[in-house]
Length: 133
Image (cartoon, rainbow, N blue to C red; front, side, top):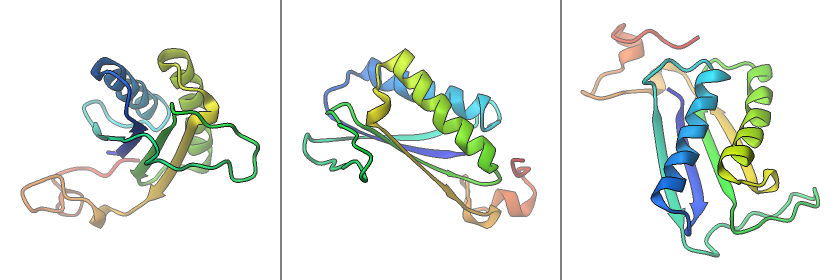
């Protein structure tokens, strides 16, 4: 568990999308210490022009290769988050050709009571699952 939403503009192949998701998952395992087989990702493709991402005054030139990642998680430190931003930029550029200027990442924290993994149960609360770190 983290739950990762990946938003991209249309134009990537299925293999490219899978490589993008796999690379992000590797960072979740390596930097966020997510347990193996703890993978929850949603990839959404948008028509060209349906992602509007300006540069927030940083002077960044975005391309159609933009990738926006939202990570819902709990218990990660500021240091882990900063390391994750850097590692995502590095690996996504090297392994998927995503320009660092085209990467936007947002992390949202939540609590144990905010998760149900199925069966209408709150597994972190009822003890079926042990909460992450």
